[in-house]
Image 1 (cartoon, rainbow, N blue to C red):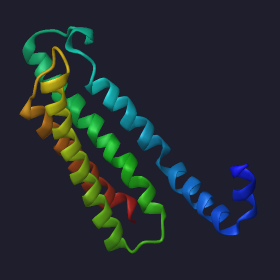
Image 2 (cartoon, rainbow, N blue to C red):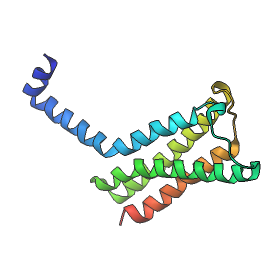
Image 3 (cartoon, rainbow, N blue to C red):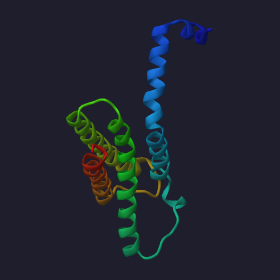
Image 4 (spheres, helix red, strand yellow):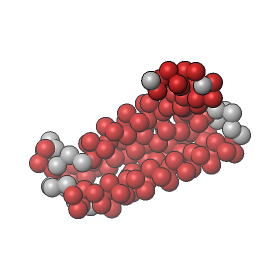
Length: 145
């Protein structure tokens, strides 16, 4: 019944089309965000054991940097295709980098308080933020040309 009403209303058809178009560009980012959320909330016992702690520390930080850098890029990329001015796009890129950095910090608190076998690691947060801002710099310099 609702779908018949929506099809008959030109305004609602336009709104639904715009919503579908908006989210279509963000599908890869949303899917990646869900995958990262699942990985970050996996209990410590379920994670694979890696080599010595020095290998783990450097590999762990590279993984955090890469995961959050890719996520930030995937959220920034659709903005490069819309009709905003270059300055507005840069502002959106910066907001995305800040928001995802804060989300990385939030994940660290979630791991500390709610996920067994996981703990808060400030260096993970720093790696997350570095990845987000690396994606910001890349997107600002290469997506807007």
